[in-house]
Length: 430
Image 1 (cartoon, one colour):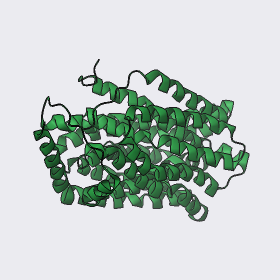
Image 2 (cartoon, one colour):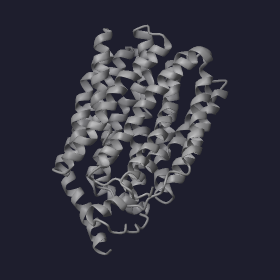
Image 3 (cartoon, one colour):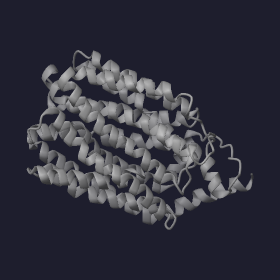
Image 4 (cartoon, helix red, strand yellow):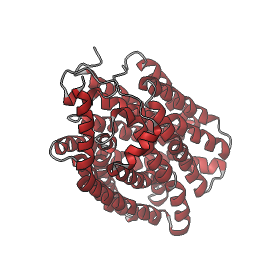
């Protein structure tokens, strides 16, 4: 099987799917055992929020630098090294004996995981052109939802029977074994292969020159679509981190569910319907992109606009039936948005800068958005209650929807045409 075969490009998605599964299972596990950690280490709400924020802050701070490195090294090496690193750190979390240890291991795991998405999204974009890119990335995105469900529920279940430390050892050990198994099967593609193929079928991919950081800054400042997409991701990730961090505790306290059931309820309904929404969002975006330059972004705007009322419903209802319905619709529309997070950016960013672009986007989403949400909601919950704090956080969704609508209708036509002309000029030289 060659790297350029029609089937292999989907095998790549499958291999990366399992890596992303453990990426999110590892990071989700800690939230399911918050009540046990609070009891053992006598932690406040703000300290628990700091465990979520420490991961997001380190992940976000490191993302631009790591993304830039990804554009200069073999992405296969970065992906597999990252998998082994964060898996070992996950296992080491079991050694924690106080809050400081937990905080340091949590921050280190953020550093270990920061290389994965810049490298994997760049890799997928070189196997999948504009006809299948959203579907490929939307399919890959489903691993996030399955990983969150598995990480949340299994961590709670393992913790109930074997203690919370066992969950980290098991998840981390599985990730180490996966990295060893996939070493020989993942193949590094030429950068820009899919984009050049879209313009000149059968052509040999152009050897892209590495983009200097100063040139990258000039490019994104000159393409407002990128800036608006990054700002919208910052708002979306702010509320998403509230789900990851506080929903298990919210259900444990408000609905009096036991630890495994609180973790399962917090992840199952919203992530299962995201599993449906993400492939559909990818298909919708690929279809609409053929008609409109900002087609992918319009799908995102619709999805995130519809998320907000259901997030508020989940936060404020006292009825389990309405809660489950709210979680399911919240998850479905969340999938529509998340299928196209990076595919939309890649419509206006050159292939040799996509790792850096993903890193900068993660910087905005995780440092500014995700890094502040857990602590802020923890602080608000001590004053207004956790239900009201989560409802307040949902307002960020409407801001994101407005930013995406402006990007799709005002700036995407110009910015996508600019990239097309650049790549067409290169293809003419082949």
